[in-house]
Image (cartoon, rainbow, N blue to C red; front, side, top):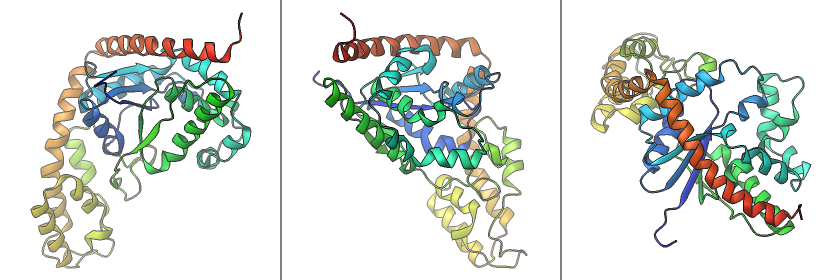
Length: 329
């Protein structure tokens, strides 16, 4: 169709409230794509089962995550927001793709072993081993041109391309091969200097109040060489300065860097400058998310409507797939 927008597909597991690293690494990019692309963003709730079968918090976490999505600026009028499990065609396509995906391809996926080791999973499930095939089904169902990912997720998109190629060659050409659209994920340190993560307890949440943000930023680790106010520091190794690069205008950021190197300012002074710019940016998101968080029924309605639209697209794809596979008279 002439003039049709390229389609984009991406999703997140429902892990509850989103932190600043999630926002800068993915969500902010999604928001900026809405006008240029035909966007499909989904809650990957079946993927949540691959390493934890306690589903008691998944519905509530889904609502909290969507409040963050909407607060950050995702618009159901400009993007399709849906729940994976409300589109059961994903499961059917997963089954069919599993029939053409060699075990060796899954064994070489690096994140499989990493998750087992990092999470201490003693008996990994078939679902965990095969989740890249479900991920391929999630993507291929909507025939997207682009899949926005960080550099660490590129192997998953490449596997999806290989699965599409194998299916097309085994049966009939149905799936175009999607391409990774690299997102420029800035370094987003947590308050302890490690990668920001809720599991580390070092995250700044999009829902945090101004007081909570200040409480988290004030004791943030800095250059360990600055033991006293009079000690010079190195902004290049300071986690606070990494946040300055994202939120603070160039002139003030460089003034802070100079003050750090010469011990002209203290770390608390530097953090005050960061808070001056970080707080207003997050206040806009927080205020908008709160309006949605107070109306969870509206969030559920948005997801239901988005899921119905996604399912219409999925049904059309599966009609093609069933013809290609040719199992029934």
